[in-house]
Length: 187
Image (cartoon, rainbow, N blue to C red):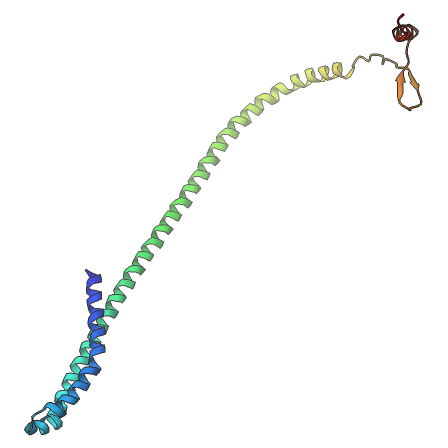
């Protein structure tokens, strides 16, 4: 409804501003040309000028009233927009405060859980510290046993250096006989 009223007021304002000059020109022409000869002094005299002043003031007040109503409507719309923005900001601040409170509560709960865990962990550590001397003595013995590895003699590989410069394993006499036998041409 407000939009329809706004459009109607805009239309009335625009038409009244647009019609004021042509109407005043038409009035000047009418009072000079169309007025009966005996009434010229009436329209051109004090009474006519007072009548023109009253009509002019009425039209001006009508136009200013329309402009005022439009300004008021705009101000109301701006006020509503500012109220919405303020309510949105207030809601955002409220949500932010809730989130901060929730985060603090979560951190507090985590700290309590950590205290509970460390409290139980400390008691477990105390129990472990009682068992550690026994474990340490046994682990040292195990380390001593592990520290003495059995060494096995390394296999020696004899190498021959040929023209290519690559080390070749030295062949035994038996394997060279087998090789010669394989390479010998068959008859």
